[in-house]
Length: 304
Image (cartoon, rainbow, N blue to C red):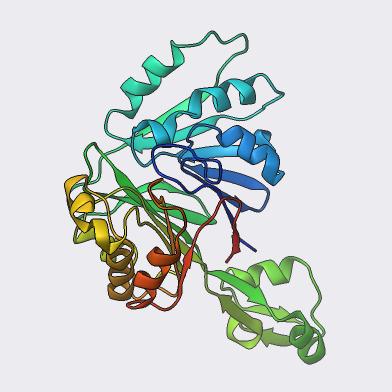
């Protein structure tokens, strides 16, 4: 199973001609999950070729406008279509109240089936935001000017059958016995006992972590520990480190050091201040500490 991530917006606060504000789209098995929904997210989805009717969950990091201002339009569009699902929205403390206010700003002609989940992880702690049989999403508090949380998306490990080996060695084909083997049961076929160890192997689930707007904090390496991919805000270069500290953001170098500390496989930096004409210095400063760094741009696609 492939996870594909698409960066719908990679700028901070103000959209520019090259960068929209924040939103990251995750697609897995036909399900679309959004992480933040800044202004213009719907249009970015159209350009990238994604159906809004496939959005099932929206995970909000915090309630600054550049991360949520596209939400009400997305909701209205979804429920003006033939949407047969409940849309789940997750966010930090205050999300239920803010969603109530947001819904009152427009008139809805169709029924809106929303379920709001307010997340309140303790300082330095990880909280499970959502879990099903395929994956879990954990969250942890960040250090910003308003309640803000980062997310860890973790696929669960899967058991697979080596069907070529199972057929050649035991004559076993697809069927109920294969399901039992995947569940860890020993089966008997044509007088032979077959254990899971004989024909099964484990596929390790992929992990990606989103570190949104935040100042330096000790929770980030814990949340990002050994992730396949860490996506991290890097609003500033070293030249403006004082502004990063003042506004509770990170520099590219700080993001890279955190990735190094967490032992992640790859880092993608994003959320660039509009003051910079390009990300050349961000990338240069990050790679000093973490060579496996890439700078995001709108519509960048990454497969895990």
